[in-house]
Image (cartoon, rainbow, N blue to C red; front, side, top):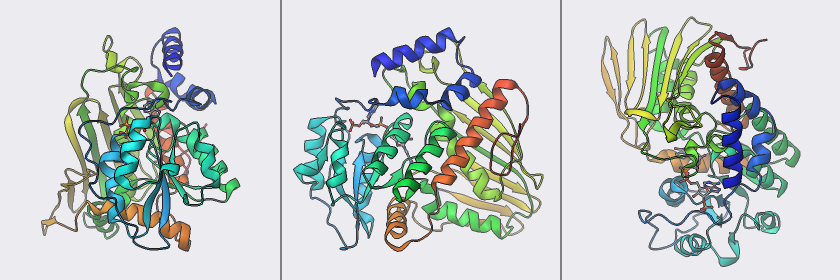
Length: 408
Ligand code: NDP
């Protein structure tokens, strides 16, 4: 991996620094997939001291529960998702996949995962003959999603994939094709589609609670501590693409689409990357974009790894405004309507989003329920991200087809 990163960095320097055109061009070629191949760290990452493991293994609640293999035992898997399986009705952890043998042992023991269901990345293909595993949940760095989703489909398993789906629309298309070939389901882990505040906001916007929408503003930002591409995959272009937009700003992009219920017809954008800061030697520090919708509504999206933390969505319409702040957190959401009849909303506990997402995937696999957050939705979002980078690189407004492709 270090060699891959070094090679990649040399390429970036040789190509005159971080420009969106090279990002878009390389992202849509097979290069990142090839470089990421075998890129899952053989030695893995040690178990962070702060991770709390369950004192008693969670129990499986129903016989028709879906058995998941968790691939990548990192911060999000260990701190958020794995503990939430206990709250799901029809999902359980059947296997774990990691590059770190100590973590496999300690996490496996805590979650009651049988020893022969603890896989290294090298042994991953053997899951094909493991009937305890119905689905693979990919919680790896983004640049590895496509590779491991395709491997999971080749093993005959369904795939739940963390956001963003991949780093290019071409990789998303490969993942969708692999899912169809294998006749297995593919779902994106866009948790806000299962979170009560965001669901209520979608309903309010459908009911025209602010009248006709004129403006959506979203921001997802935080200040990243000192780091570099070899220390932190989020700053490594092969694994993270352009950086904050794919990782965090994607929530604002998603909100703009599901709150307006529209696809943008054009995009303009600007990126910023300070020189001499190792955090941003390969990725952008800020990305700002403006989307124009067929109704005339405009969305202004900002995301940053280098400004004070915030996470909000505001919708302003002819009859009022909806304020969500924080908008898409794990918990603590707040939402109010500023209109003739102002209101605060408390539609439910945001904590349910994780387990509901898991149960929804089981319902899709077991009962054929339509997937709310499909591979096609992930592909759509990557097309829009590519259009944002193309707009920033060219300094031009990019026109889009209704399915988000750049209109040539
Ligand atoms: P972490 O860095 O905490 O964990 C990633 C894990 O992937 C590592 O612990 C390691 O697991 C494994 N891995 C394999 N190869 C590599 C490699 N080359 N470099 C680094 N790690 C590697 O990341 P997160 O858990 O924060 O993010 C993982 C995914 O989850 C991303 O796609 C991210 O976008 C998504 N995410 C989603 C969130 C949401 O709210 N839906 C929130 C946070 C993240 P091991 O040691 O077991 O091999």
